Amino acid sequence: MRPYAGPVPFRVGFVPGVTPDKWSRRWAEGRRGPLDLVPLDEDADPVAMLRAAALDMCLVRLPVDRDGLHVVTLYDERPVVVASREHPVAAYDEVDVADLADEHLLQPPDDVPEWRDVATEVRDGSRYPVPDMTVRQAVESVAADAGVLVLPMSVARLHHRKDVVAVPVRDVPESTVALVWLRERDDETCQAFVGVVRGRTASSSRG
Image (tube, rainbow, N blue to C red; front, top):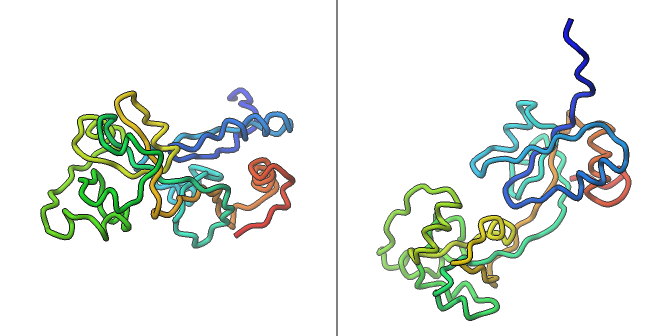
């Protein structure tokens, strides 16, 4: 007979840049059951992990496929341009996306359609393919002055280096962090965690 392993932890995933520590502390203060915070790789599919029962809930950046999900929006993040510390944008507190029109973007143009629509290298066909890179690798390329990135502020902070800067960008929409879980999985534990992240009871509204 196997020894009793204790209660099964409640598994909450979170995408890079999201910091759930304060919610973990609130959960523990409420003397609830064990909580397992699961950091996800940048290429992970949170919704697929929910559907596969690998997670109970997940903190994600929208948009996601909402079919069959409860979605509770939590907060918005400003976009920033990540550039070499020697880059001219380092002298500014914030920039317009039009100020980046002549830059080489080290990510797919469709990731930042506002840049794509004004970019010189897209308009004149001079853009060359960008190799597949992790965000960390892309930031290393930024440090070498090979181009720029546009990221949510928390992701830029996660990959902060002394040789790069992160400057807020106007005219690019903010990204939204949300808590998601399967409608069929909804129960008192899920609602208790909703209450924790919303700073109130589990009666918060759901999407």
